[in-house]
Image 1 (cartoon, rainbow, N blue to C red):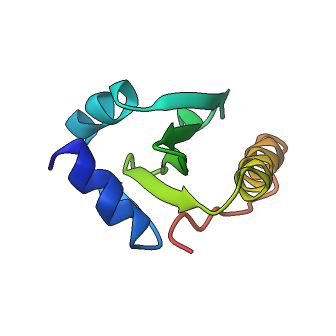
Image 2: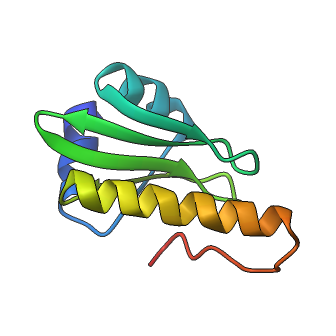
Length: 101
């Protein structure tokens, strides 16, 4: 898929799973607003494309997910929630992240 197709599909779905080799072109064609190391599952990134925000993350199954965010506030809350989950996992909470919700 082209990056335009990827962002179009991601804009019109809850999330989009992209191929590993597509991630490089996605990152090159976006502005990376925020990037956080999860220390367990690569990085979680806030991307901006033509005034649209997307979250990019990698699941424990090594799937690259891209999801559209409605606002900067929603994106910040989403990232903080994910980072909180990862922090609790370090503490051995046994909690699970539902990447597909």
